[in-house]
Structure formats: C-alpha cells, structure tokens
Image (cartoon, rainbow, N blue to C red; front, top):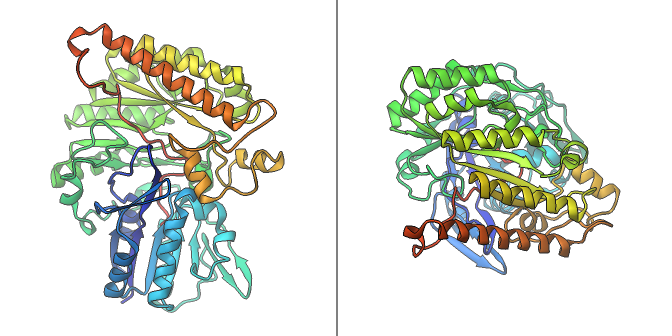
Length: 495
C-alpha cells in the first residue's frame, strides 16, 4: 500500500506584521479523506509547532528544516503532497520538496493549491517537483493515487500537470458541481485536542478563536475583481454544499469534538441568499447555540436587514465586509466589483442597529487610481469607524500571479519584472513594501497614505476612549479582531 504524506509547510511573515498562528490544515484534511481507503495517509502540519526563526526582516514559523528532514526519513513516504497557499509562501514549500528529494530521489513530490494552479508551468521547470495538482484537488488527487496504486498511466488524469521529455502536459478538469459527494475532512488524522486547546488558534483571524474550526460551504466566484485569483483555483462558477450537508458538518463538530465557534471562510458565503437563509434557519430551528464569523469577508450588497437579523439570531459574532474602495468609479471601472457604496453604508448602519460587530477590508494602490481616489477610501474607512464602529483594515494592491491586475502591471511595466516570493510576501502584509507605481502615484506615496490612515485611525480610537472615562487608563485595544486577510487565493483544497 502506498504511503502518502501531506505537508503544510512553515510560513513566513514580516517583522511588525500579524504573526502566523495555528489553524486547521483544512485543505489537507479534505484530500486525506478522499484517498484514505487506497493508501496509508498522514498529515504533517509544520505550523503545529512553537518553533520560529528570524532572518533579516522575516520570521519563519513552524518546524525547522532539520526536523522536517528527520520526519521524512522516519515516515519513508512514497508520495509527498505539499500545500502552497500563495506565491509568497512558495519558498518554504520549495524547501520541503527539495528536502524530500535529498532524503530519497524516488519520493514523488506533488505541489497543489492556489499558487501551483496559477503558475504550474514555471514550478514544473524545477526537478524537485514531479507533479502539480491544478485547481480543485480532491478528485484529481484521488485519481492520481488510484492510478499509482494500480500502476496505471497518469497521462489521462485531468487537473494534473507534469513534465515529460521537456514538455509540460496539462488538461483542465471540469469543476465538480455536486460538492456534497465529497467526504467531510479527516478530523481523526490530526491531533484535534492540540488545535482546539491552543490559545492562539485562529488568533489572527477572529475574536472567537479558541475551540473553533474553519468551514467552507461553497466554492467558486462569479465576480471579476481584478486583484483576485480565486477563480483560477476554484473556478468562476459558484457551487455550494446543500444546507443539509452544512448542518450535518456543524453537528459533527459540535457533538463529537465540542466545537462551538466556527469561521465561515467561503469567498461567497452569502452569494445565494436562499441557500444562506436556509442554513441560518436550520441553525436557529435546531438551536445549535454556536458562534460564528466571516473572517474572509462578504459582499454587503448580498445582505439586507432581515438576513442580518437572522445572522444575529443564529450566533453571528462578527461580520467582515469586503468594501475595497471608497470611490464608486474605482469600484466600478478599476476594481470591477461594482458594489454601490450607498447600499454598503446602509448595511453597515443596520449592523450597528442590530449590535453586530463588524470590520471592513479596503485596498488602495490600483493602476488607474489617483491619490485623491485613495484619500476617498481612507476618508470612508475613518468615517464608517467613527459613525458605526466599523473597524477598517487597509491593504495595498499586490499583483498576484494569474490575476488581471498582474497582467495590467506586466503589460504597462508598473512593476520591476516578475514578482518574487519575497516581494509578494512584503507587499501583502501590513508593514510590507508596495510594488506598484504609476504616473499618478509612487510607492512612497502609498506608504505615506498608509501612515496617514494609521495616524487618523489611532486618533479616532483615542477620541473614542476619551468618551469612555472608565476605559481611559486601560491599555489601548483594537476594536475588532486582528484579521489577517490573506490574498484572495488563500483557501487551499488542492494540496
């Protein structure tokens, strides 16, 4: 029987940015559930370790290379599947693959996730990578392991990219429409107690981090935001689990593991209002008594007052809105999100009325923006925080591989060559360096605007505290979770 080891590599962050905290390796748990009946499969989560190293301006969290090498020698896997959540994290995934080949050149290395889905051609040029799983990974990886086990040819597996005689071969796989046919994640293949009793579990993602679990109830994105690469990995067609499947999954987590807090990490949780309301109704009717939030963000224009009331009643403890810009022209023509700011403000008002804590994502620095456009975004962010306690998180546009933004930047030479992993890493984190400059703004302008935003936010926080004398002399706290928004390629199913 084949021995398969699925690895979640160490991760890196910039000094001063939100550190990397423990989270369930959900993508690997889905893959393991698919193939467990055909092979001996194990999961190695390198982040399930307190070890960290400092080098230059970067901090690496997770099991160090010498320990990874030791584990691979002990496990003696035939196949190693490596999750690559983003290009910014590629170097650690690359190191794991290199270690595998050094331990035993016969180990078959398979890289999957958002980054290989976007640029498998360049990854397969390296001898340490034998195959890439492109796009949604469950069925592709199942077919791959089945073919290896039965000594069948791999050439006809759709969704699998590989190199033969100097030529890269790849045939796209049609995305699965019936998500309910996939099994639940392999909870028993990770140390559930270690995660659930960890005080920093999901700490960078939520205020309800302890005793919590991420769930993903839908896939695909029918929208066309220029900075987002999720449709490369999960497709543009929206597909969703049935409300029955979702409730069954929640009940399993509650009854078997005592989990009461959930993070809905869907890219489009509220896209299908009827389905979403059906889930809320079932949570309420069956009195599940859970708390949940949406750390990955939702579109405000998919909500209304009645849905928000049901969200509150079903246990929603926090909503994160993906507002992106405070300028309607930028939303419509540059970002191509086309949400109406007037309606966004209305929904934010409802949240305050219903006493639902909320946060918001904003992004500045797009080609086509002016400094005044970006100031509109900063002004809206501060205004909504002042009026409705909508905590803002301001980020800088980064040209992720496979996105329209990347194509624009390369076409118009707005960045210096192809982005490196380190450049993307620093670009997407709080204290990183902007990559894009245009005739309207420079990288220095972006940094200045970010610093201006931080000063205004701090001033508003202090002003709010002055209006609450009892809290005046306490240590200042952020209002809202310290949400670390990953690039929109973050959810890793194909590992």
